[in-house]
Image 1 (cartoon, one colour):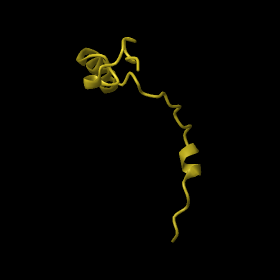
Image 2 (cartoon, rainbow, N blue to C red):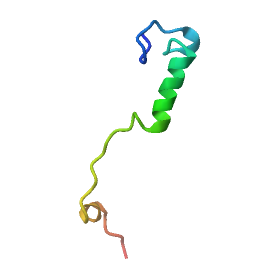
Image 3 (cartoon, helix red, strand yellow):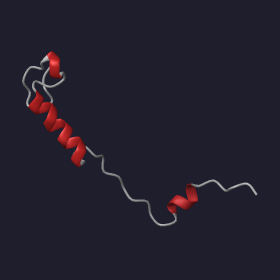
Image 4 (cartoon, rainbow, N blue to C red):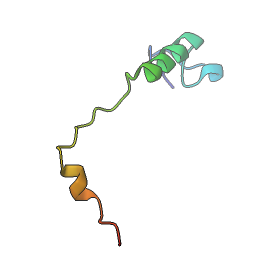
Length: 56
């Protein structure tokens, strides 16, 4: 298995990474939002159309 950060061979202690440094780089990317999936904002009123009416 290759390290997803640098491509070196993974080490069992840090798997799937090769070192503590690469594991920390990956954690930093998660914490700063670098791995976030972009989303489209809903148009005004669009969210209201998708909501089900409340029973009275």
